[in-house]
Amino acid sequence: QGGVVCTVTSTADAGAGTLRACAESATGPTWIRFDIDGEIALSSSIRLPSDLTIDGRDRSVDITGAGLRVQSEGNIIITDLRFHSGGDWDDNDAIQIKGGHDIWVHHCSLSDYADGLLDLTKGTKDVTVSWNKFSDHDKVMLISANDNDTEDENTRVTLHHNWFKETKQRHPRIRHGKLHAYNNFIDGWGDYGMGCSTNSECYSERNVFEAATNFKAIVTQVGEDDGQGEVESHGDLMLNGAFAEERGTVFKPGDFYAYSAESTDNLSAAIQAGAGAQ
Image 1 (tube, rainbow, N blue to C red):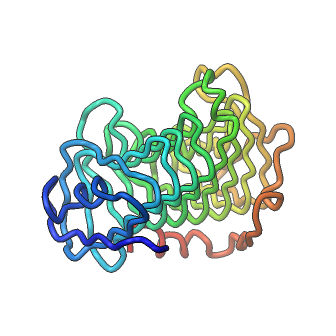
Image 2 (tube, rainbow, N blue to C red; image 1 turned 90 degrees about the horizontal axis):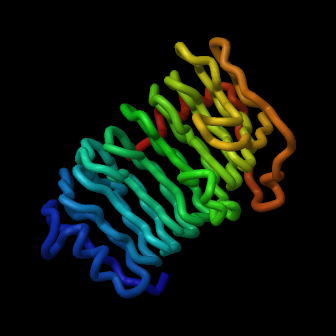
């Protein structure tokens, strides 16, 4: 609101008319739109400023190589982009947010990066992740990087209507913070579905967990984490022997915002049809 529109006219990595130029030149509220389709192969990540929307609606925009990075910035929207074919170097995430706040990732398709697809760490809070498709990946979504990151105690994340399609683990993996996950489709995971570990609180509501070879839909401790998290499962649909470990009591989402969780009837079909970049 009250900002400017910057239009991407080039699929080059850098220079006039590129996504990088639009992001790096933003000095106030900026709405980035695309006037082109195609692949933007990034040699290094693009750091996003506050008050920025990257809007790929009505276009077919692929981000490859590196990804997008947020460092202690907020009021950011990322929508309708395809992230895939990430470069094989350490700490290369499709979207990496450290200490960010008030962020919305919506209708994106994310797959095949060297590290994570979406990592939320270092005190990041108030993030909504909705209608995305995650596929062809191992460590999908990390919320808080280790047991000692107590700044993540104020982390709050909402996941809804996402499709985790036959990915291995971290749907998500969370420590310390609060997670409200409702109306997601966690489909044929490898090691586990959701991992709610060290001091975290997870409110899982009307999700569809469809097991393949592993039946652990929600676990309260992951790997060598020092402690367990607390989990409540409300109306989740467990298929093919899937089960959740419930432990303790957690926050009530209704204390933070108004929302309406749908029935799990036909939910997986709706998510498969509507999740990801459109």
